[in-house]
Length: 121
Image (cartoon, rainbow, N blue to C red; front, side, top):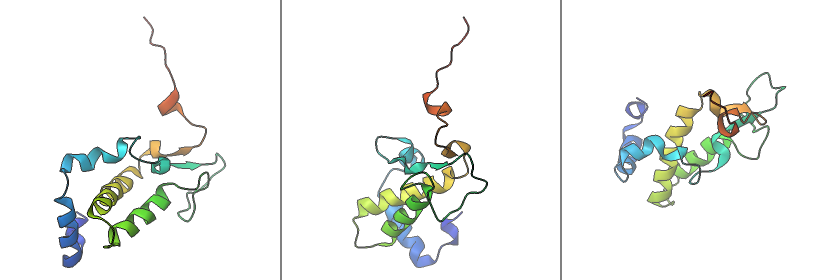
Protein backbone atom coordinates (compact mmCIF):
# COMPACT_ATOMS: atom_id res chain seq x y z
CA UNK A 1 0.00 0.00 0.00
CA UNK A 2 2.82 2.40 0.81
CA UNK A 3 4.34 1.83 -2.63
CA UNK A 4 1.12 3.00 -4.26
CA UNK A 5 1.28 6.31 -2.37
CA UNK A 6 4.79 7.26 -3.53
CA UNK A 7 5.68 9.96 -5.99
CA UNK A 8 5.94 8.24 -9.43
CA UNK A 9 9.67 8.96 -9.76
CA UNK A 10 10.42 7.58 -6.29
CA UNK A 11 8.15 4.60 -6.93
CA UNK A 12 10.08 3.74 -10.11
CA UNK A 13 13.40 3.82 -8.20
CA UNK A 14 12.00 1.59 -5.44
CA UNK A 15 10.58 -0.87 -7.99
CA UNK A 16 14.00 -1.07 -9.65
CA UNK A 17 15.58 -1.97 -6.30
CA UNK A 18 12.86 -4.53 -5.51
CA UNK A 19 13.61 -6.34 -8.77
CA UNK A 20 17.22 -6.91 -7.67
CA UNK A 21 16.35 -9.45 -4.97
CA UNK A 22 13.97 -12.32 -4.26
CA UNK A 23 10.73 -11.13 -2.69
CA UNK A 24 10.38 -13.93 -0.09
CA UNK A 25 13.71 -12.81 1.35
CA UNK A 26 12.21 -9.37 2.01
CA UNK A 27 9.76 -10.90 4.47
CA UNK A 28 12.29 -12.71 6.67
CA UNK A 29 15.59 -10.95 6.00
CA UNK A 30 15.86 -9.03 9.28
CA UNK A 31 14.88 -12.06 11.35
CA UNK A 32 18.29 -13.62 10.75
CA UNK A 33 20.20 -12.32 13.81
CA UNK A 34 23.64 -13.13 12.45
CA UNK A 35 22.99 -10.86 9.49
CA UNK A 36 21.49 -7.97 11.39
CA UNK A 37 22.33 -5.87 14.42
CA UNK A 38 20.41 -5.80 17.70
CA UNK A 39 18.89 -2.46 16.70
CA UNK A 40 15.79 -4.39 15.70
CA UNK A 41 14.64 -3.99 19.30
CA UNK A 42 13.71 -1.06 21.48
CA UNK A 43 14.53 -1.69 25.12
CA UNK A 44 12.96 0.57 27.71
CA UNK A 45 13.60 0.99 31.41
CA UNK A 46 10.85 -0.48 33.58
CA UNK A 47 10.03 3.05 34.70
CA UNK A 48 9.10 4.17 31.16
CA UNK A 49 5.57 5.49 30.82
CA UNK A 50 5.80 6.48 27.15
CA UNK A 51 7.89 5.64 24.09
CA UNK A 52 9.74 8.71 22.82
CA UNK A 53 10.94 8.54 19.23
CA UNK A 54 13.89 10.87 19.67
CA UNK A 55 16.14 8.53 21.64
CA UNK A 56 17.15 4.96 22.39
CA UNK A 57 16.97 4.97 26.19
CA UNK A 58 18.90 1.74 26.85
CA UNK A 59 21.36 1.52 23.94
CA UNK A 60 23.25 3.53 21.37
CA UNK A 61 21.03 2.14 18.60
CA UNK A 62 17.48 0.87 18.36
CA UNK A 63 14.52 0.80 15.97
CA UNK A 64 14.48 4.60 15.79
CA UNK A 65 18.12 4.98 14.76
CA UNK A 66 17.76 2.03 12.39
CA UNK A 67 14.85 3.71 10.62
CA UNK A 68 16.82 6.95 10.21
CA UNK A 69 20.00 5.20 9.06
CA UNK A 70 18.31 2.92 6.56
CA UNK A 71 16.20 5.73 5.12
CA UNK A 72 19.36 7.81 4.63
CA UNK A 73 21.10 4.92 2.85
CA UNK A 74 18.08 4.27 0.64
CA UNK A 75 17.94 7.92 -0.41
CA UNK A 76 21.69 8.14 -1.10
CA UNK A 77 22.09 7.20 -4.76
CA UNK A 78 25.86 7.21 -4.39
CA UNK A 79 25.53 4.07 -2.23
CA UNK A 80 25.75 0.67 -3.90
CA UNK A 81 22.58 -1.04 -5.09
CA UNK A 82 23.34 -3.86 -2.66
CA UNK A 83 23.41 -1.43 0.29
CA UNK A 84 20.23 0.29 -0.86
CA UNK A 85 18.37 -3.01 -1.37
CA UNK A 86 19.42 -4.11 2.13
CA UNK A 87 18.15 -0.83 3.59
CA UNK A 88 14.87 -1.13 1.69
CA UNK A 89 14.33 -4.62 3.07
CA UNK A 90 15.20 -3.50 6.58
CA UNK A 91 12.89 -0.47 6.41
CA UNK A 92 9.96 -2.70 5.51
CA UNK A 93 10.82 -5.01 8.37
CA UNK A 94 11.35 -2.23 10.93
CA UNK A 95 7.98 -0.68 10.14
CA UNK A 96 6.25 -4.06 10.25
CA UNK A 97 7.97 -5.16 13.47
CA UNK A 98 7.55 -1.93 15.39
CA UNK A 99 4.07 -2.83 16.60
CA UNK A 100 5.11 -6.28 17.80
CA UNK A 101 5.46 -6.52 21.59
CA UNK A 102 8.55 -8.74 21.39
CA UNK A 103 10.42 -5.91 19.67
CA UNK A 104 9.59 -3.27 22.27
CA UNK A 105 10.37 -4.53 25.73
CA UNK A 106 12.48 -4.16 28.85
CA UNK A 107 16.24 -4.76 28.86
CA UNK A 108 15.93 -7.43 31.54
CA UNK A 109 13.05 -9.27 29.86
CA UNK A 110 14.65 -12.22 28.07
CA UNK A 111 11.68 -14.57 28.42
CA UNK A 112 11.12 -14.96 24.69
CA UNK A 113 14.75 -15.70 23.87
CA UNK A 114 16.47 -17.24 26.86
CA UNK A 115 13.96 -19.06 28.99
CA UNK A 116 13.71 -22.81 29.21
CA UNK A 117 10.49 -24.44 30.12
CA UNK A 118 9.97 -27.93 31.37
CA UNK A 119 7.25 -29.93 29.71
CA UNK A 120 5.57 -32.40 32.08
CA UNK A 121 5.99 -36.02 30.99
